[in-house]
Image (cartoon, rainbow, N blue to C red; front, side, top):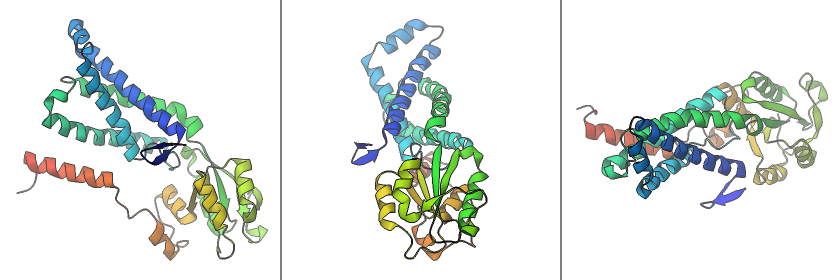
Length: 288
């Protein structure tokens, strides 16, 4: 991990941010040649001005910043390729909002008429292809499930039904449940007391806590230590909600309503909503 603006960022995420910024910059250069296809002299003049490179650099770095705010570099989040592409398109739309406001206030900052639009059109499929190319190695995750009871079986079934997520169950850890309750064909690796060595031997990326009874069984210290090392830890209720899009009422616990993230509105969404409201009100689209 490396530290950026007092926040730890994975090296692969940081490298992908730089790569996508370079892709946007390259697409803007290609957009200049396409824009002046019949008059290449004007394209050479535009590319020869230092001010153009400053403008293009601003556009190139706005997109990775917005992508980061939209959590597109958080590879621990479970999402299918279709959801990933859809979120990529939405994030590109969010990036156009500050650019549009900026060009409205300072029109001279625009690289050229139509160039940004052409560049974004070229950049989106290029970034999508880049992310698909790295998906096989970056997005594939190994999951350890704590527990072998009914809740663990529900999680395993939900994971098995989402083959598009590229998630494999590395194994199960028992917390004192009878072995007869284990899911069919389950690979039991040991007990929860052996969590740390098992995580390191299997190189698991995510731990799902599906213990029926957590009191005096849940290895809190080990989970905190692994979470500080970058392993994602979540409870079974949250995992089921992410996988199926529904809340399993038969397995829910009251504490889930307190600790779940479903009721949180990100600062970016609030900012985008306020920006859209402001634009609509100033252009006459608001209701009278």
